[in-house]
Every structure is written in C-alpha cells, then in structure tokens.
Image 1 (cartoon, rainbow, N blue to C red):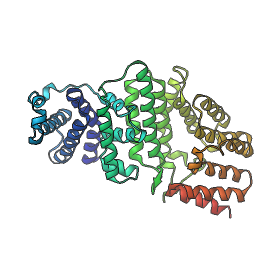
Image 2 (cartoon, helix red, strand yellow):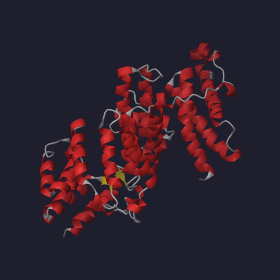
Image 3 (tube, one colour):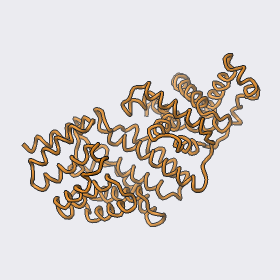
Image 4 (cartoon, rainbow, N blue to C red):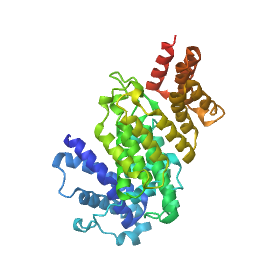
Length: 405
C-alpha cells in the first residue's frame, strides 16, 4: 500500500474517533465537524511531507481542538461566546482519552429526526470521513446540493438537541434498525450504483463493510449486526467476477467462481453459522443465509434452489416487501419452472413502487426468456433498459433484447 493510501486509510479510521472526542467535550456538532475536517486536511498535507506522528489521534485531536477554539475566540464570535471561550483550553496530548466514540457518533448521524438521504450523507461525512465532493460524486448530485443537505442535517441535529450518547432500552433497538438500514443502503449503492457509468463503487462497499464490522465488534450479541456483516462479505466476495474486461455485466450463473474472494466467503459463512439459531432471526440474517447458499455452490448448476426458495419464503414472512417477492419469484422459477415464477411476479403488477424501477421488467424478461417466449421477453428487456439510469445495466438489458432478435 502506498504511503498516500495508508495515510488516507488512517485518517478515515481516526476521523470519527476525533469527532466523537470533541463532541463529548464541547457539543455543537456543526462546529466540531468543521474543525475535524480542517484537521484532516492539515494532516493529509503535513503527514505526506513529514511522516505520520507518533500519536496520530492525539495530533488530530489537538489540531482540531485548536481550530475549534480559535473559531470561538475569533473577533466576530467573541462577544457572543466570550464566557464559553474563556474556559476552553486545548487538551494536552497526554490527556487525550483512548476511548472510541465512533459508535455513538454513528447513532447520532442516524437520528430519527433526519430523513434517510440526510442520514446517509451525514454518516458518510462524519463517520467515514468522506469529503462533500466524494459523497456528491457517489450519489451523482452537485457538490453544492450535497453541501446543503449535510448542512441542513447538522442544523436538524442541533435543533433536536440530540445528546451525544448511545440510546438505551427500546430507543436503542429502534435506532439500531435505522443504523443497520443506513449501512445496508450505503453497501447497496456501492455494489450496484443506481446510475452512472460504473456498475459498482468499491469505495462505498468497503466503507459499509468497515462500519458494519465496527458495529458488530461493539455489539457482538446483536444477531442482525452479524447478519448484515455476513451478507455484505458474502455478496462483495463476488465483486471481481461481476463484470468482464470491458465492464459489461456478467450474470451470477455465468460468473467465473474462481474469481470470488474465498477469504470473505469463509468469514461470512462463519458468521452465518455462528449467528443463525443463536439470536432472534431477522431479515439480514436470512439474506446472508441466501447469499451463503449461492457462494457454497461450486457451479451454478449445483445451487440449492429449493433451500433458497424456502429462505425467501421465510424472509417474506419476517420482512415482506416487493423486492423480496421479486427475488422469491426467481427462486420459484428455478424450482417449479418459469411460469410459476411469472405467476408470483404477477402479484407485483399493482405495486406502485415497482412501477418506478426497471427490476420488475428485467426479471419478467428473464423468466419469459426461460419460458420460451422471446418476443415478450425482448419487449420487457427494452422497457427495463429505458427505465434504468445505470449505463452498464442499460447495455446489458439492450444486449439481451438484441440477442432475442
């Protein structure tokens, strides 16, 4: 790993720890987050030239604290903050706590007063250490738009008077569901980008895995945290086989399985084995079990589709929704034939959320092709291609349509 890359990874790991420390001492999310961002920038420039200091976290904490206090003691703020600023001192590096407040910070960024897009953006900015430009690029929006979204999110946190501490009891369980969902969305956007020229964004999937690993390490008894980590590892393990040399999509059945990451698969399988049956079963554990069945098959034709169909049936009971039904239709088709799968798909025709996505037509095209109806399949593929904003998916669906005449 290059020096620049290792520094970037270190800063990403330390960013939430330093921000958490400042928030615990001073509060005021907005000001603390800005100070940490300035410290990260200074570190990126200085460490590349002078080397990483002996205690990098203490260095960042000291610089961020100094920037924060300088701002509060500035001429324009002195009259309003004089009483507060007088009591502020930059902490001595030997006094900086080794405690890691990253988990509390993650829960704060997923505060229920924020919308889902704001939770995503704030998590990537504050916990992951991504710049506003990087987050904007990931979601293909202008940097100014993303900056406004993050600014509004921080203001909402301030107005909500959200405390910087892990919630307790029922509130913890409710907030944990939100945190897991945010991490799931980050991973999904990285694994299959909703739009743009690339099918996947490895930076987002890697960050989702890192944060979920941190959550699982901090809360080892939470079955769904373990399940989500297993799901991510087992799914991301196929990343290198999902596209060919020119970036075209390779369907799961056609992937070169020797390219799958066996280390990630083994870790994911171990998590599934250790978790299932030991904690209340939730949707992430069931999805991880489905991914495990796929990853355990040495060849596509060896896939245990009856087990996958049963697992999707259980998932539909635990967490019903159109996407689950869509995937169950494929499993039903592989066990009972494409016409049976098409019958399951027919139950989604009146679902408004499915009308907004290309996936229903894409799956229907696939099942119609398997059923020997190339004309209807071709039309479904064409409709799906027109509906998606992902260029790789557009090319793949258009090619499938063209191959049918």
